[in-house]
Image (tube, rainbow over all chains, first blue to last red; front, side, top):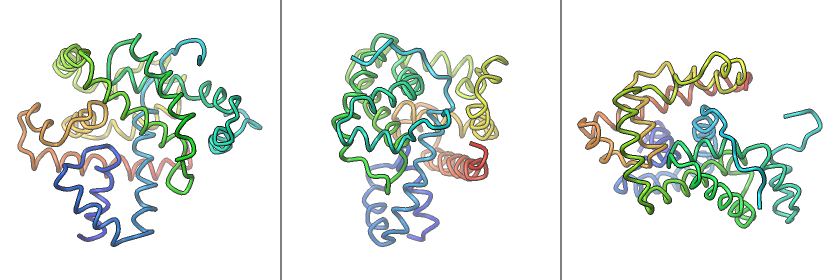
Amino acid sequence: MSFEEFQNRARLFVVGALEPDEMAEFENARREFGEKAEAFISECYSLSEAFALSLKPAKASDQIN
Amino acid sequence: MPSGAPSDLELMEGIQREDPEALSHLYDRYNGILKALILRVIHNEAEADDLLQEIFMEIWNQAKNFSAQRGKPLGWMVTLARRRAIDGLRKKQAYARAEESLQQETEQQPEAWVHNSTEEEILDGDRRVLIRRVIGVLPPAQQQAIELAFFRGMSQREIAAKTNTPLGTVKTRLELGLKKIYDGLKELRDEL
């Protein structure tokens, strides 16, 4: 798997859209690319943050119990 | 965030030291966003409130597993909240109601995720507007695929079945859409 393919898979991974048969390949590539892979995955979590931040905040219950 | 206020990372470190004030600050800062995320998944106000409480308890209990080297606190919390909400959706009978609600949304407002803000809301949330702008340039089919994956926890195969679209097309839509959003967010980074 090229690093570009890994990047595509990583973006699917952080939004939970990798199929089970893609997961094993992804994990192998993740090990192969090492720190570079981990750094990219960390950056990809900006996608999850953005999807949450794209929503209008809801009114929650008054306090944490 | 007001100047002088603790950063998200400082609050997470506080929670790791079992400082309840840190959790309280984090709750004040993010309960609205996390509840919106939960509501987007389960469409039930009371269940969302219950789940929100459980999620902040989990943040407290699992904080020791958070590592700043692997991402920001908000990304970690969103991942945790999304997983819990989707688990809840699958377990509870709310699934059927949410499915019905999603069906109506998809039929009536396929772009509701992005285009449901009023002018007042737009003035109220610059960051949200900027993010929505990035998402909003995607073709509706790509937005829909991402929404079904992220907010519904659907697999590529489930999305293909639900939208009556070939699996390869769903995969391409997700990959292209996510790459465009990722690239757009990188450009926005200085503004957010």
